[in-house]
Length: 169
Image 1 (cartoon, helix red, strand yellow):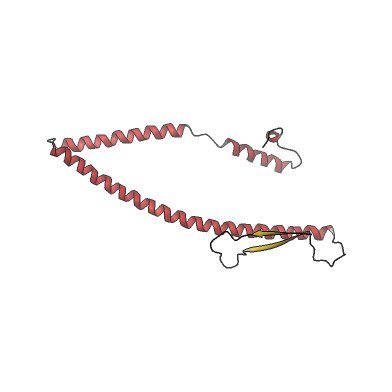
Image 2: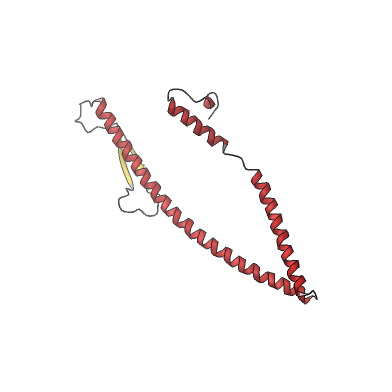
């Protein structure tokens, strides 16, 4: 008789009702020693254990995703604040550049025009680089293939999918 343990103690905090360590008896029955259980009771027991395992895995996933979502929200907020401050800094640096050009003897209007054209040129360059990066995108071919295989297997569970025959997947 083997006993398996499912450990769930790698997270920092557990909400009420989440089990840290759950013991699953494998191959053990609730029947008296020396008696055999019917196939139906064994299947029912396995189904109950599987249901408990799936339920506890879902609870663990909820806990992990909640913690990750909180961290992601804080990070996104801080990143937004940093972007706003960078925009303010860019505006002040732009004015400093314009007045620096004006201090060199260029009329104020021409100085603003030169700085504006410089920004438009930079924006165009960024757009060209972004366009070339986006053209290189490809669909997730391997994922599409495995999903198709899973659908085929669900339709005919006794037949191996064609793309997995003879490949080392």
